[in-house]
Amino acid sequence: MNTILLSVIIMAGLGLFFALFLLVSYKKLSVEEDPRVKKIEEILPGANCGACGYPGCAAYAEAIVLEGAPINKCAPGGAEVVGIIGKIMGVEAEAKATPVAHLMCQGSPDVAVQRSIYIGESSCRVADFTTKGDKACTYGCLGLGDCVRVCPFNAMYMGEDNLPKIIEENCTGCGLCVEECPRDILALVPRDQKTFVACVNKDKGAISRKVCKVSCIACGLCVKKAPEGSMELRNNLAVILDYKQVDTKAEEVYEVCPTKAIELKGKFAKVNTDG
Ligand code: SF4
Ligand code: SF4
Image 1 (cartoon, helix red, strand yellow):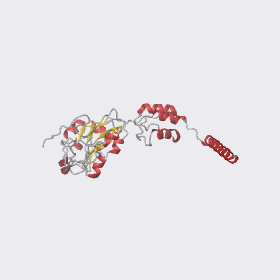
Image 2 (cartoon, rainbow, N blue to C red):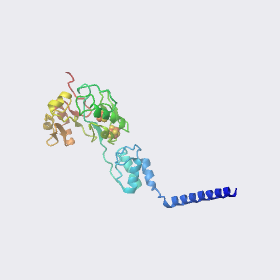
Image 3 (tube, protein in one colour):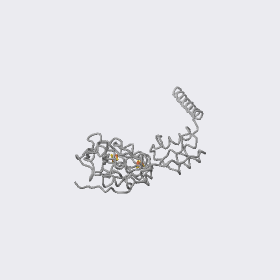
Image 4 (spheres, rainbow, N blue to C red):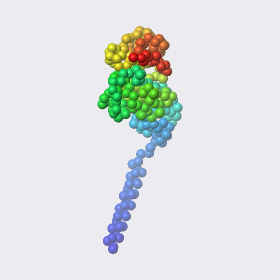
């Protein structure tokens, strides 16, 4: 009986000793968290979108306080969040103008040639990897909405023409959709840009026009119409080098394009869908 009692007392004593040891160690070794980290984390949008270049809002808050990371890297937060973080940190920074996502393809089913019926998993990435989807154009939008599903801000939806649409008021320019698209046909563009070459097909004009009525055929007419040096032809595609310059002649550049691969924001292409 005495042996049992002794064992219990020893075990209880050891338990108490280790508990006290852990408590003292915790107190001595624990690092006080800078309260500014929590404050900043609370005012960040909490979308954990990664647009700032950090794995999430908490990591970015920590980087601002502990590593002196720039305070204007949160695209969804915009100027308001930069202002509040500035007050907390006692620094000033200008909010960067946030870009907006734009689809560089107008290949809806009425203008893009369908070469097969895709019946696999409803995922652009899977379709691209397996059969290349149902369109004859292997550059264009696959229309299965991977980009829409990844947007954390409800800024995208699939339109009736089977192409993703961007709700610009909701788009924060986080770029997640751009990264997600297996065809690289979403881009972040300045919010005020009006004129686009909405095609990424790099095949020669004779080939690209066979697969889509609104493909860029690299005829160069837009380049000639745009202010000198603001556009050029590269890899069988027209490329905008200076959008502000091109926008000064937006209507003319649009009108001269025979396929209407040139897109004017908010204007529907007058495309001949017959035949
Ligand atoms: S549309 Fe794209 S860039 Fe805009 S918020 Fe959604 S995922 Fe981000
Ligand atoms: S833009 Fe890209 S991700 Fe979005 S539906 Fe088209 S192919 Fe898929």
